[in-house]
Image (cartoon, rainbow, N blue to C red; front, side, top):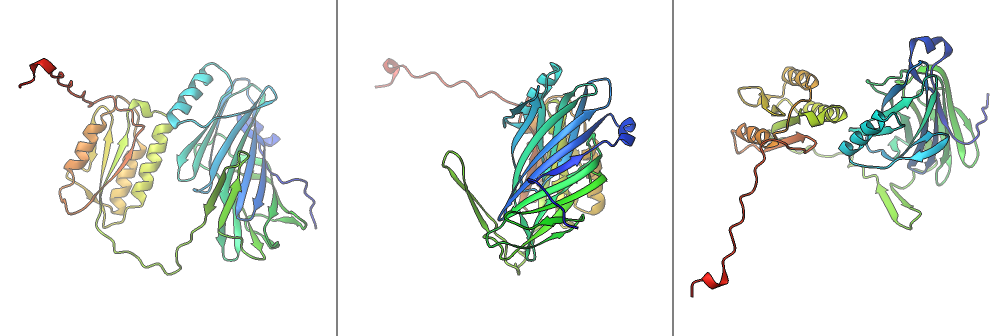
Length: 384
């Protein structure tokens, strides 16, 4: 059966009537417009939250994107008007979000947690009301054999929404030289030929954790360089540089690694979560022949293990990961003491010390004032 699609969307609708009693906040509708132009895909995701309770609620939606995806726009609708957001440093954004939230106004905060993980927070969602948010991101499509791959990785742990009632994916595809085929990977796929080619997926009552993926097979793979000019006349480009198929493995050297993790009070909330995610990622990439130390600092410094760097065995990494996940943010910040502790554990100077520091940089302890400058000599008192 041939399906017909109008302009390209991916829509996610959540909260079926049967599940409304079991959930307080849901995504009732999410619309994703995907525009594929050669290797470049730009996706516009619109989420409409619904609050089934009689109280104001906050919604948190954590999701994954390709690690090299660039999110370049966040907007929300206030009193029917689309209000675009601004890009500011993480700590500043979190402070502004808290201030606006405390005033019971309408903020939205999109935070990059690292390694392709994102968190979207929206507050307040009015009792029995809805709130609409839009995210726009772009990415260079990766290849798999002769195909370009588009993928929506889906929700991650920590979200307050779990399922969608109606999942609909609509894609508009333009590739120089034309498209030979579009293949479904995760769901049944409807395709309508033409210029541009449109493809769509529809699924009812599915989990937000379920990825959506399809492959585009062009008649000829587009160039690995993408160039775009913005409205101001500036030209930008991105290049895909695959390594040689037979890349010789460089000789591995023993590494002594110190993972420094800031658990002071200023890291409370998403800052600590992002630091924990980064520390766990660094820990996971250590090989068994590496040695490592875990140094947690706030008003005091805690070091694991006590007797020097430990081999990066699976058991040691699991124990360190358990400690990282249990951390709570409290007190001041003594980064200088943490750096001294890391240096003291570098017993063998022939082995390079690799430092992984996860902090917001707000040091409040251990700082020292520079000594006052000596007074300038009086010209009349200079020796002759």
